[in-house]
Image (cartoon, rainbow, N blue to C red; front, side):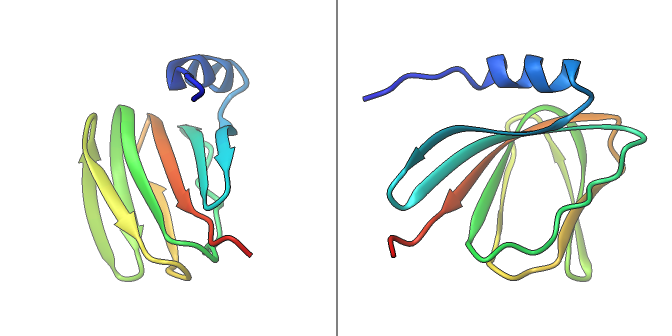
Length: 104
């Protein structure tokens, strides 16, 4: 067992102007914190693995392929592997990212 507080990573990343930090890795699983601060755009590319975003702070809109979903604190969304996606319409947004990493 290992305890961690995603808010610690949020604080570090906010001070750095945004970014991504892995807070836990184990076989089949990666948890990270992703902080976006406007006007910096979300430059992520499609991922090889399924993922879930859980909004920790702020709000924004996630574009997945040709659909948009508005998200705010406490909400979550699933994005399938390979889907084009990015956050838009945010000022300051912090999300917990859960990647399913198949054991190879």
